[in-house]
Image (cartoon, rainbow, N blue to C red; front, top):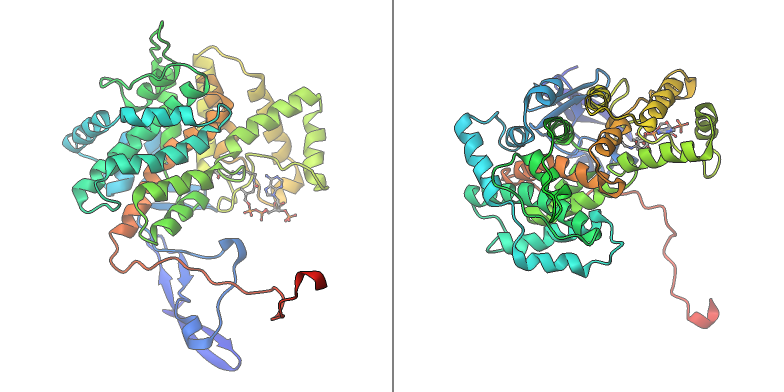
Length: 429
Ligand code: ACO
């Protein structure tokens, strides 16, 4: 392919620049097409649209490759801590020991929620979903963290990033405690990121919870696997909001809302609900798969299957499936839902409906099994995803903030509504 692509419209030829990424991906730059020809491109659901150039995360969906800043996810899942992966995503390089210690200290110093924010938890109704609490509290936090609405310097950004990462974890645990009408537990200075979360979730006034090394390791790995995934729905939302120069907190709160839906982060809870429903109904896996394939009105989707980008396998799902096996073995836990999940996966992978559509298990298919083994309740599953995805949202926000040429995101549309008509008085309608 050359440097330009040619497009002919109404007998006029247009030359469009071809952009080539680091890994050889090609894109036709159509940003000037409308100005030159009056045409826009139409791509409902953005399946074929690159919304930005980004140096953060690379995915090759056909080959099942995921890399953060060039580092393969398999290496990071095995060797990195979540905090290190977050620093890598946000600042572009693996931290030196001094940078790691500095940031860990910032996380520890910024882990507690300001005491006057605690009363907000009581203002949510008892049945409020933790994702609603999470997005509301992130916006509330902005007022505490920033002297003005906007971040004005690199130092202010670093503090805001540390505060968000650390406090979102504290808010998540506190939302759970508030929901259970139990006293909120303060973070501890001496615990790592994952241990601290488990401590705040499960400590009771009468019993300190000391998380096991296995539990902390599994949670750390889960968080690393979720930390970024290029221009997915929630990250695109964060970038959309950030493009109006909204601050980091407002952008991250919007990301939480986008993540909540069952087609995105909400799928991890939906998978467990699906498995429980199959078990309770007594239906066989074959019967359930047949219902999915029927596509009749009300037929379910196979939750945790399929991905817009991965058309071969999701590398995170491979890692997480093995981790679920290992964790349950080490904790001597058996979970009938894991057996059912394996059976469902095998049935789907042997079925032409799924094979021909290139539908494979995604990260959510097995992540719920790990979360259950850790004792995390179902309505906290998507919150766990949000804690994990935050570094990616922050990194994407920073990438835009650092780009002086950044413009507001403003897609166009093809209008298909009625033509002009005149207003009619109500008695004549
Ligand atoms: N179960 C049954 N059929 C499916 C599924 C599924 N999980 N996913 C896709 N299909 C079918 C579609 O109905 C479509 O069939 P058709 O060609 O007969 O019309 C075909 O496969 C192609 O699917 P699309 O809808 O084009 O896939 P798209 O890229 O738009 O959606 C998505 C991707 C949302 C992930 C979809 O696969 C899905 O809904 N999966 C279940 C929810 C889920 O697990 N979400 C988590 C995604 S990963 C993440 O966010 C962490």
